[in-house]
Length: 281
Image: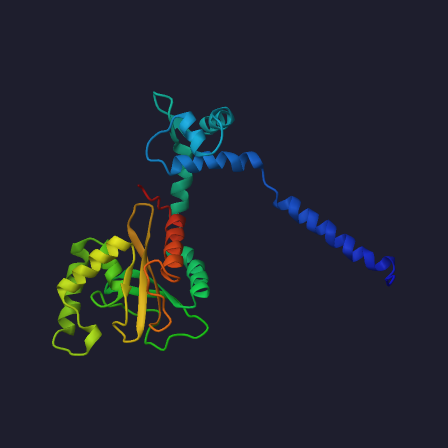
């Protein structure tokens, strides 16, 4: 055993003290964290809730929940109807509206697609609805990027790509019909296998997308490249973004619940949640 001397203990002591200070700084107020669970339950429930039901859903007793609700009533976080049931109040509304006004959909989703590309090892693109159709605004490449002509600003085909099918599935028909018709007309008369689609096939793809909550292409429109695309919704339930994961058909897991589709669904759901979307059952 070597004796390093007293001087070598000081950095270690200071390091321990610094760690304790950092842990103390990160320590929150437990009552606030507990109370937020009650507010979260109300945010995910469409109708006003009785105290016992609210407490049960938050995993606590009515006696424990009651003091929190009294305080929330005083500041306007919640209100009560004539039956005594609770719902979110005007203060919660003001906070929510302020947050929504400051939201940037692409900014919120960008770190999520970066993580998705790293997790799946696939290229991941973020698309918004533009004047000419679904337009790529972010592109995250894996370690070995795809050698395809895809970049920020690319407008995706409505009739022949997973991204296009996604927007066709969740936007109003009057918004997309014209672009689908023009897209099919541009491809008509061409030969070349996987790029050829009919209107009936596009409609079938839309039905499949709505059924699975994802659109999927296998080996098209670019031979050897497959893709999934998932919807991101805002607080009003409107489609605002499409997240598309794509990769070589030989290594791309194209199963609906596979190693690409599952994290993609999770990524899109988290992005939607960040934008204020609440899924109703």
